[in-house]
Length: 424
Image 1 (cartoon, rainbow, N blue to C red):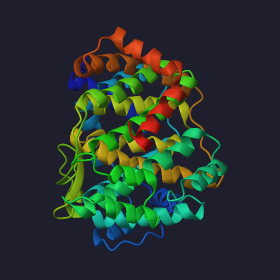
Image 2: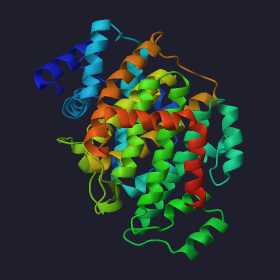
Image 3: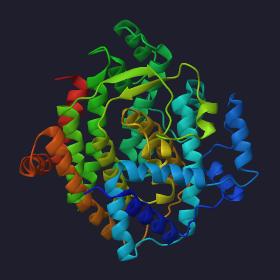
Image 4: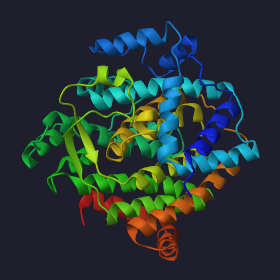
């Protein structure tokens, strides 16, 4: 059921108030300095004058938060009914509480939106940030050119499989985007790819992503996205969040039935109905971006499914949750959603690695399991709607496939990985 805008606006207004936030708030430069230092951005070298100026401003004087709150509200109200439903339930249950972590997360959202938007709209900035964080990763022994040693070193930072698997499976997508944006409309030949692989300029996953099965590399990208979704789906299924795992299955199977094409097009990547001058100032002329044509229903379900997953399964919510709330994600055009999502997720994973390497962790709310399970039930309803409209399966058929996959989840995931690595 879609909420009427006045009711949805009231729910969001009350939610903001319950978190101890107000539309007239401004950022705290001291908190900004802390966040920038924690994110290892205090020594970022960029030739982009606009970005340099902006980073100087946000650590020296308060910034109005109303444009950020307005952009997020616009996205939630127009695109994400499941978030409104969960917020309404949370207000009734009095789940939303003010905290210093909430205040900090607002500052994280502010900075993450700047970085994500800059990387999406300016290839030079993309390369600068990518190189900066790759050099930071290598300090911890994380270099995806050497997958096995990276896997072992990642386990030293975190014993959790999901924390280890995500950097290894996601990093190649950023390398793929980086190389393909630089190539424009052309593609590397198999011979050129082989040379890069032999010289250890790319790893095997990156080699696969850049190998042309089709003109637009659709199949390889889709396979890796499905693997990423099922990684999370299996984690939540094993931890008892079975309702939300249904959404993971629906999202993954939708990519098989309605296979999206990945095409690099010249465009600006700006949140819908946004007039903030920042986006225009940071955008590069002739910017190439991976357009992945997905439905808004898919993007909306992915967002709320992942929110419930993060809430139930992860800590450090003050730096993890913002990746889903920034305007470039929550209010993205559906065809820009997944490309921007890869960027925000990649940045966030690096932030988490930095925190975990220092043996720090911020625990979530005490009742987060209860909250996540309630959200999973809301998402389950929307997963059935997606399946009916786009996969053309009713709830019984979807549940049958769900039971088949999750009866032997690791075996089925390993089969998907095998197909990705070796082909069908």
